[in-house]
Image: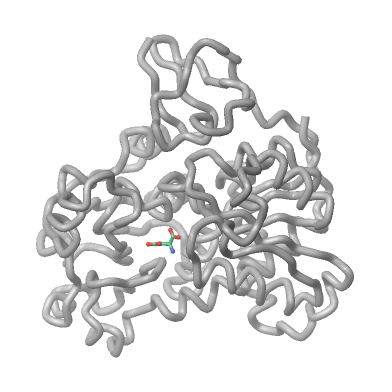
Length: 358
Ligand code: ASP
């Protein structure tokens, strides 16, 4: 049982709760000084096992702007992780030093594993190529501010849809609002994982898959460009082959709607030509700035909301079945219970969503 307000996946909160957090972020953005003391005396730990600029610094800036303090590391080799400490022990201890713990980790399912043992609220700031819910809150706030709505949107997502955790969380979230449509632009190697496509289908939303940006550029209200996630490839040759496959250029922007916006979770590598930055439709720097306000709202919401006591693992424990995803947190954190949701002919790993055929 867990009685903290964790955000491991977007579905830890309901759609009305996401809307509440976004509305709070809008209020904070309009008058940040009104919130300057809201977290006075509170401590947030940021544990970043993987590189980050925006997520880490916007979380830290958010807590400081709320009057709170921060501890943590941005390089695990400066911590006892370098001495071989497991995730459980690090989280167990740091969570007793802090009121809220924000973690980014290389392994899929690591945020859930952390929440299982933490003695404070846990926020997932990215778990490998799996999920990135606080980027999604940033993206939802940006859509709300730029286009005025979260429904009735045609959203084109382009690039690395396979390993792009921001894409996974965003598609899951936007599928929950009415009449959203997705145009998925990727090579077959980088296509959206089938478990995310199943979420779209389950909400009755529509999606199409195409190979080129030219085929999709005229349609969307929002174009979400993504970086090819070099660090997730098992072969450098595959990355080299795919790294420059998509590039949004000024020339391509001529064919897009006049009121379309371009978003990108950043960092950009080569997938958006720098000349596009001067187009008023380029919303990605405004989006990054929104991240700080939405994280202020999320910290405040997490700290002030009465926690709902609930189990973190809902599935069946199968001690003899191992998750087949080599990037799943259960591969290295051997003490974790092997918990799966039973879907008849498949078991779904409760940490990383890998499907295992029975
Ligand atoms: N900053 C985003 C993430 O952490 C996107 C990226 O790295 O490409 O997932």
